[in-house]
Image (cartoon, rainbow, N blue to C red; front, side, top):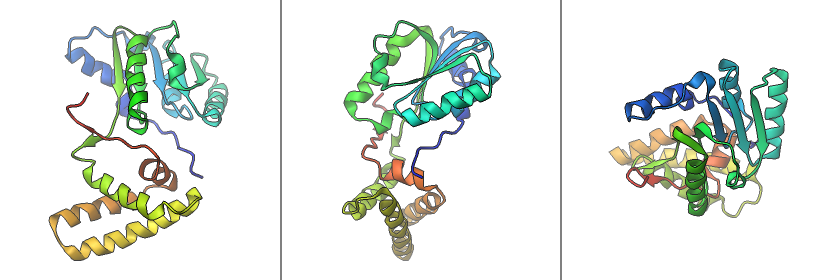
Length: 226
């Protein structure tokens, strides 16, 4: 299956990035009773873990995938969590929403949408934040992503003529092996760095390769751009 698998992300815990916000002078809300929004929540695993830990807080998860939101709602019902809701929607549909949130999480969204959508994400999140609210935004950053983007561009070129995602992923794994063999022979620091990247990628599941390396959009930023 190539469906994106939801996971917990400890770095997105409001207590964690809220503490960083306090260091920068924000008087953020108490996490235990906060209102928390996750944009791109997938199957809701990350948000469900927070909702179970913080029963007096209020949670809303939004994702464009109907299947993922259906699973998230089912899990919430099975866990009998009354403090969480899930909404199937493009995040731009939140633009006119009246409620405000103390914490907003957008993990694994920004670098995977086009610039117009990136701007919309920032604009909408700013509007939905309470005064002194904290926003967690993850994105891929150069220069660290240069080597992985080189591998991505090679894989996109080598799989362009293949129609099915399964064939693309299978062929990509073969290409990764060939690249590792070739770069090992070069025996240069740059080649060794690329081989280390490939060794890491080989252990990732098919859905990661399909989305992160073979997906239509992946736009790392210079660290100074935001």
